[in-house]
Amino acid sequence: MSGDPSPPSSGIPEPTSDAAASQQEPGDDSKPASDATRGLVRKVLVASLLGGAAFVALAAFADLETTLHALGSYPLSWLALSFALAAGNYALRIVRWELYLRALGVRVPLGESCLVFLAGFVMSVTPGKIGEVFKSLLLSESRGVPIARTAPIVIAERLTDVAALVLLIALGSLSFPRGLWIAVAGALGVALLVTLVTSRRLARRVIALASRTRIGARAAPRIEIAYESLRELSRPRLLASATAIAVVAWGLECLSLHVILLGFGDDPTLLQSTFAYAASTMVGAVAMLPGGLGLTEASMTGLLLALREGMPRVVASGATILTRLATLWFAVGLGAVAFASLRFVRSRPRAPEGPES
Image (tube, rainbow, N blue to C red; front, side, top):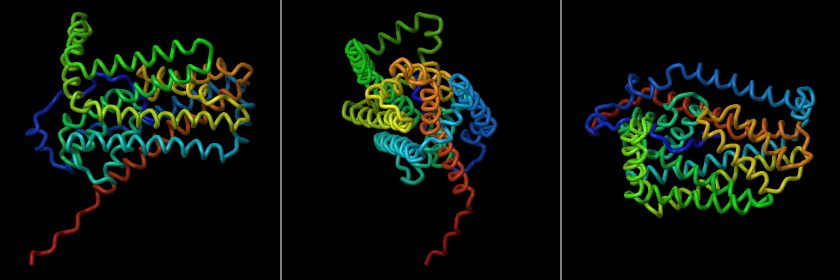
């Protein structure tokens, strides 16, 4: 998946004063974004090898030779449609990114803003928390925007992504018996999440209870900082708009799996495809694995086999491989191109200003 939506965490950097942040001049290669990308090629290469191992394991699960033959003869038109749907997901999430930037009063040229957002995808398959704030680091480096000012956007994005996936899981659960109870539980879960974010009193009580545990005591101060920052982006109208965008965006990736299955000659219901994609994505995100590698693939294949009785293993495995290519590795590739473009633009010497007349 493109930038797996891990649950909102306390991965926000410690706040820095605006005065200190403003001393970071754009273009200084010693700044955090440059440090964060040190060894980036090696990290992405390691993640690619892990992703390749997951694909080989899936193919072997079904029968390696049969799976390779099925993938080699797969209709390119269906694959192209799947990639187009994934691109629609990215476009909608850029719209949400822009909404959040404007809400914080951060003005960045649209072209550069799009490149910054897409560049964040390259970090979605790298371990560690740096991927969560990579976009903020890039804006700090290029525009001198304090990291603490835009880091809450990451949390808001994760919050609305999780809410959207839960709603899609609830919707998809209607495809099997007694799924209504899952749908109701999902809707209640989203309502509780929104209540926690919008109710300061309730949130403070939850944080206070968490701080009584050993792990919670360490994390509570940073969680409280993250929560206060998040409230600025959780005004009802903005929260509703961002969540609606997220539902449509992730719905497009559910549809991406659906068209991949149609290309294999399978005929699932759209609700089944929605449940399989959204649930497996959530499993990978909760596990906090880079890109959900391994666990998302296994979950998607298992759910397809469970939901589609009689589905051949080669179809489930092949569909999972192609879907992950379209929704995760396509994003990583776009991110690499966007990041390289940003670096190229920054390395170009600025034209000298002409003499004043």
